[in-house]
Image (tube, rainbow, N blue to C red; front, top):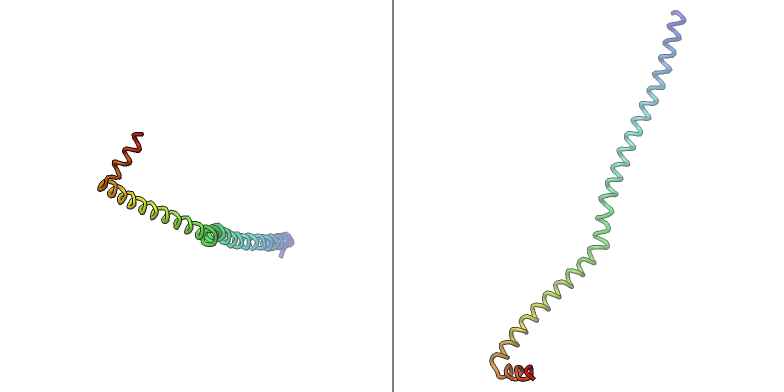
Length: 103
């Protein structure tokens, strides 16, 4: 073989080795990047779910229970108000209240 061709083949072989190393690094970095992106997405989705179930859910349950209690008390007050109005209409107590209000 001629020396020029031999040198060119050697140079081509070295460049091919270097190219192969770079391609392997690029492939490894792409795989690791995809893996870390998947982990990052899992953290972004998982942390709010964890916080909700461990911290917010009990507080929200207490708030909803308190709101339900307020609604129940409000309903009882309306029933008692209706009963009181019925009793006042049926007796002369209404006249007595009107007498006090005029003074």
